[in-house]
Image (cartoon, rainbow, N blue to C red; front, side, top):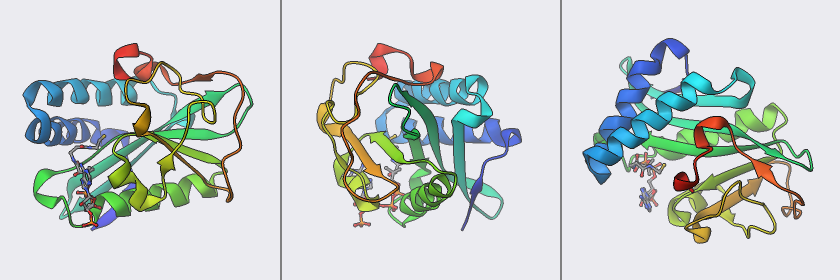
Length: 178
Ligand SMILES: CC(C)(COP(=O)(O)OP(=O)(O)OC[C@H]1O[C@@H](n2cnc3c(N)ncnc32)[C@H](O)[C@@H]1OP(=O)(O)O)[C@@H](O)C(=O)NCCC(=O)NCCS
């Protein structure tokens, strides 16, 4: 299995990976919702505000993860992981954790100080994320599931409370996502 940065020419294959994987796990309509979110992320996010990493095997994409810029008034350099998918018949074999670990290493090398995500603590705690309060890392919108608000420092030590508001990229700028 190979992990690499995505090439925009793979956009259709990546969109299909997310539609298929989320349709399998949560039904066709959720698959379509996540597929259009992923398309929107790839189409509307500035190159400097976007990372997408893919895992491939035999020239087929079997996993993908997106990170997009979060702007904090304090100026901390932060990205949020969302969404990610490992194609159904490759799940549970370490692909997701390898993708995230490769991504975090790359972000760190690029000077990113804070990685955030919004998801299942049981899974994301395997790759260093922990639950954070919204008064430590402010969310861009009211969270429907605050126990899924997770972060990790990429520069070591505790996460210092961040004051002021945060803003996500345009593709996530919809209250129903949060
Ligand atoms: C969640 C997902 C990305 C994990 O990818 P993966 O390649 O299967 O993950 P890995 O094989 O690296 O890690 C699996 C580990 O996480 C756990 N895990 C996997 N999915 C989990 C989930 N939804 N909830 C809790 N734990 C989970 C497994 O128990 C396993 O633990 P172990 O290594 O101790 O046995 C993948 O299952 C997936 O695409 N699911 C459908 C889409 C989705 O829910 N995406 C995440 C939200 S954006």
